[in-house]
Amino acid sequence: MDLLVLKDVVERSAFGVCSYVGDKFGINSAKIRLYFIYTSFVTMGSPIIIYLILAFWLNIKKYIRRSYALGS
Image: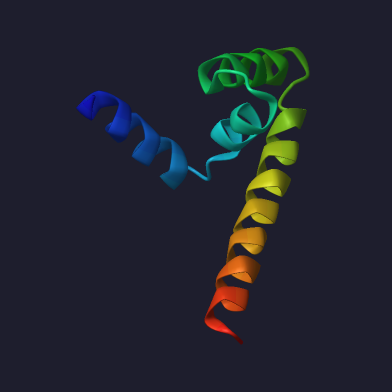
């Protein structure tokens, strides 16, 4: 059980893009990470740009929700 909690903390602190996509589509985040790595090698790294855009979007989304919760 402690290993699962540690894994979740590490995934969330590393932008959490793969775990977010996995939660949305009901797919294991480890499989999404593998697909991401494989496509990065095949396409010479272009999914890294998509990953960074998604990470930026998730952080903005989190910031907006936090500001609405505080009443600002």
